Length: 175
Image 1: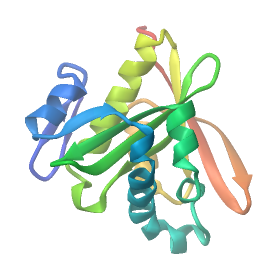
Image 2: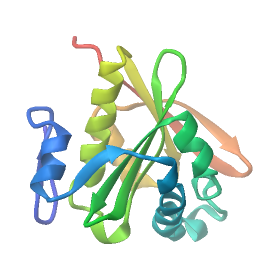
Image 3: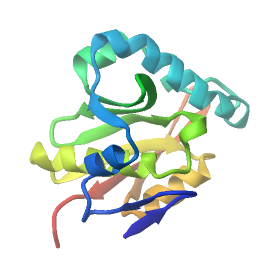
Image 4: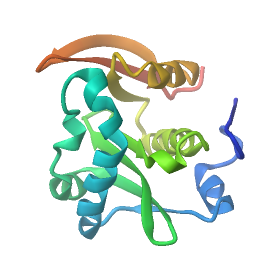
């Protein structure tokens, strides 16, 4: 599968996501606790556009990222020392759950989100997980369309404080 963007292409799975980031002059690395405030700011910046759409503040904007970095597997993408994207993988027994994937608005539609999803799948396979999960708000139709196109399937919906989330999973086992 090839995911195209304005000026770049991300080929999956032939090219590992790390080479995609390197090709763009970006750094993909594990987050450190010292990144927590920047992660929160980036998340708030990227998710602000959804407040009116979902009629509330997305939970990910309220998260304590100091705790998340300590407890989960968090990856950041940097451009010239500035955080431009974040991926949070939470271990859930038999799978990772993508609890946050965010790209700064000025970097969206360039393949970074798709490359981060591929990285999440690679991390899951390295941990010997057979599947990966994520959730998104039901009004974020572009996200749902992307996730479905790359193999995620809806498993259930859950309403939490008036916000309807769609939970999806993708099998990582070769057929």
